[in-house]
Image (cartoon, rainbow over all chains, first blue to last red; front, side, top):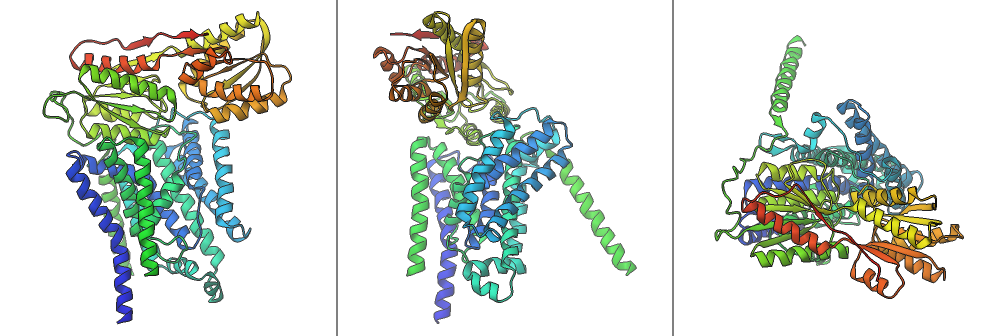
Length: 315
Length: 317
């Protein structure tokens, strides 16, 4: 009986973000004739893909009870490095692979600081965020990197597969793989276990440090991927790219019902959270709402989601 | 064992073929049916023209004035104007312009956050046959119908020549630069350096970016004041930085000529009070107005000039 009640409440909790998304879609469909068109849906999905990729990684980090503030900076630096290699005439495939590697290394550095350096994740990634931002400005000399001159590279962010924008494909593939990792692998279970009770997990013989380093590296990898796609879409790397994207990613995770204290949550929720934020941006644009109010609305929605979440937790 | 190998080989072949087919299906052309340009009705049924205006940021009085000029012109011409604010994020601006395309506006006015990053967005509008006009800052690609802007190089030169005149041909000068990489910062800096470079007695002792931002103008200037005992004049790439620098200079109790750019209300008042030596007036309101007028002209089938310059003037009192 009790167990059933608990399962039901968990089910409801998982349903919450989905119902919110559905409500948003219905309201916007009524208010704007341009909203529920195939064209606009693909448009929104493409706009969402960057935030979603970062937020997927952020879900892993937050599930372990950590946080990563450096994702936006990793996005900028990896994107700039990839653009730099491309404009120097490097093979696009190699440039992208090295760009992804650079992001993974930056993420691994975060992981090492958190585990071996025993620095609190908030502080460690705040510091690396500042460092990576600085390095991006050093590397780009504060100017956008242009002249990428590769159709293959441009395809990554601006291309289509039939009618589907390629960034949406990258987002979907990543989602499936990450979903399977969290759901079906030992490391996925360890991620949840660490967030639930780190000491108990350690005592039961799990190499906690290794799992955490993996999680931060994965987030670095995904941020680099987002950075490379963004660079491809803009056909240039911006020195200030990804500014405050860490906050959008955290918002997506929280909106999706993942607990900031770790151990509880799921990546499907994050996808829904990212969709809510993206659709909100798009819908408010379509409704011609002033950008100042857009920020107020976005903040209010996040607050509402967290308040509802807390109510459920303590009910 | 052998059978197993064949199975695997077959699977691999199928996967490779599938990948090849999928890759071959990739294109950078939008697969969405293109507007053939014959439907001039736009998003409304009553034939009212709708113009979208994508602004780089509304956190800067200059662009707010530009927006107001555009709004006023739109009202006079009976056009609906939709304004979106990119908040200085090129990625958000691309999304903003895409959203305008979704709304089937009749024309798009873009004030790019970055000339290179905006190209994708312009191409999206091009594919939907929506005419694009760039405002204040240019784009490095895509089909642009017209560019409405003042000549920033000329403005920088005006400021430089004015400073040389005030200093009587010799002195030490500081340059506060705008966001590195933006065309406004590049052009104003270029004009200023051309003017000052020609003057024998003028020496630029410091050139630092303060990102068009008042609080950064303040801190950067504070630092420069610390490191340079003798400074005679400051040229800031915009008024926000000039006013920030002015605060630093006044706090330090030093007597330094400051020249700004944009002629915002605050700056003009500071000029009237004799605190700011001058500001280069860019007439943002007129830029916004001309942008809307140009769009309407083009939509009515009239031909428009590719480059529509907006006059600058030096405000000194």
